[in-house]
Amino acid sequence: MNIDQFEKYYDFTIRCIDREDNLTHYRLTWALSVNTVLFGFVFASKWDNWLGEYANYFVRGASLYGILLTFFSLKAIYAAQNQLKYLMKSLEDAARKVDPALRIDSTSKMDHEKFNNIIHERTGYPRPFGDGSYLAGKHKFIQWGKWGATTYCWMIIGIWLGLLIFIEHIPAIGGKQ
Image (cartoon, rainbow, N blue to C red):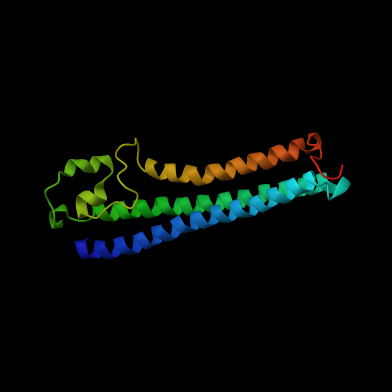
């Protein structure tokens, strides 16, 4: 593969990476927004006791809906993250096929390739996710970005499960008793 072919592939892949990154952001934002509204309704139903004896049923239903919604958002985030991993691997594989002698700035040392920086070393282009050489193992730097988005989802699922389990022990807080 020559450098011109790699440049086109790089530009296309960067656009795909940007799209998948935005999808992760949108999916997480949507899940957090809907769960915030659900939490507000649950709190209002327990605070004002506006549903009376049906408040616990409403909280159970909202909890189940929150768990399902967040679980499906989590699966969608995992799908986007897996696509990011695939795109990064395909970009690295394409960079391995570029002859390093074609690189414009050939002053850097090729031994940096062992630190998972092959894209920059072979082509001079920046890595889409930065330099992952400080982490052990291949693609570990993607994991940090994945954990941020998925941790919120797991925390929300945990909160909904706790609410679902302990709803009987949460009294009406204020308002009409």
